Image (cartoon, rainbow, N blue to C red):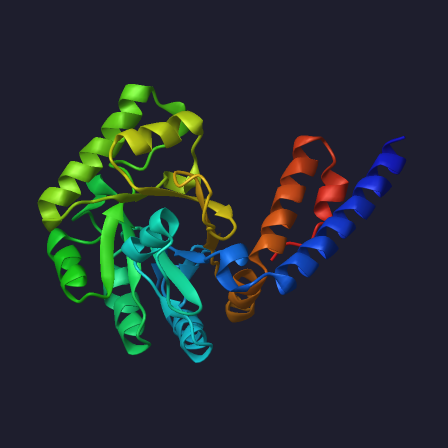
Length: 280
């Protein structure tokens, strides 16, 4: 019975992937396919982890975006599209960085400038000025360059699902107040630490005065979705990071579906089936 179930599930999965491919390639531009929100963390040649992109690899990825005619947009532009259906440039993309590492200033910012890109930095409030993280002066300089805009990544980067409602509200408000005082402008966008959220956390983000909130679930952003549970496109280092980014950029809905399929199989005690699901 288990074998039959596994075979049926495999056939269904293949059909779903095929249907997704047909939908993707017949959908008009970004109104159905959505807007990719790329998610980075560190950019340097010293630390080696999936979340640390080598400087040369990051440069190659930004060069690819420029060559392919992508236009990096701000959070305000994304919000205007989602809220009021305001027009966007052709091939819009949002570039985001989480946590606030100092290499976002020393390594990523010059490359973004070189290729005419701009990005959003989601900064952890209590990491400002900590070793390896950005200082208040660096944050101000990054914003003054008009290459980066700085928004919230909560105050202390905790798993919000495990906190009381009051503690979550404090994480949101403390970070917002600190950044607004430091930068001198409203902070209206947030990324959840590690993407962890639930409906209660989503509601508290809205109550705190944020306009958009992001997870790290793999997918594009579309009009009409819950604006406090928006997907992104995580970008990792690896054997071929440029190809990986290209695949994620162009086939994110399929890749996100494969990750969801894998998680479903693992959650339902099918590790063997989960192990054969291709991941990118």
